[in-house]
Length: 81
Image 1: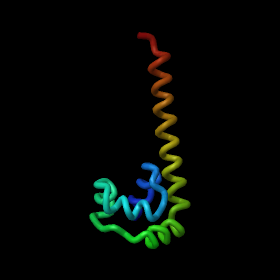
Image 2: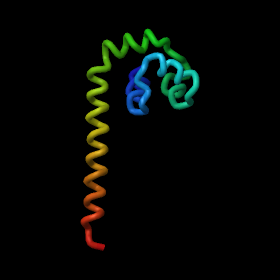
Image 3: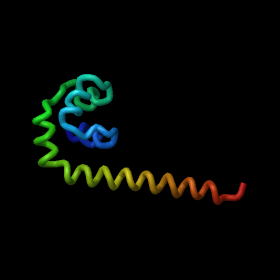
Image 4: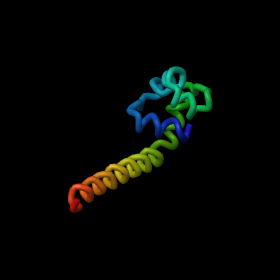
């Protein structure tokens, strides 16, 4: 579940019920959940307990990736050819 919830946030699936449905339908979610579909109440309980720390870390990572890609793009645009 530690992989499932952050992946859901990154892919835009934030609802516990939608994550449960994705575990049945989506190959990526199925892989991350080890081919087991947790119930939405288990996902919600996990989120209530753990998600504040996890999502902040994911948000920080996503922001860092975007900023490093933007700085790389600016470096490429400013470099002489």
